[in-house]
Image (cartoon, rainbow, N blue to C red):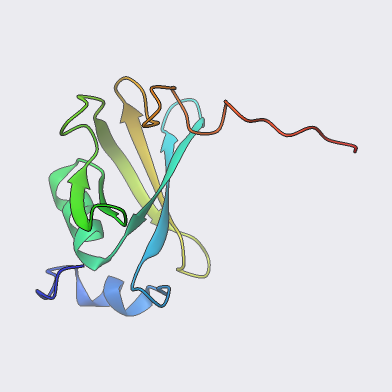
Length: 119
């Protein structure tokens, strides 16, 4: 992650409970249907960018860089609201998803591998 200080509101930054690598999980949810779309990771700067640009921005652990969802695919997430969970260790980003949310091309990352119950 970047070593540049983030412009995230210090009051919000003070509340966040980050993993050892400085990240918090961020769940993207379709704002009007409640459909869970994907899980990404945010550090303070990604959260700041999300809050100030209206575009969901994540930290790519594999690429080691920030990415605003849709910059390369066109499958943009327009942010409608952002909330912290009760422990401030997870972010919920309600979005209007344009196109697929999953890198596989699926609408959601959670519809391709449903596990059987009762076994």
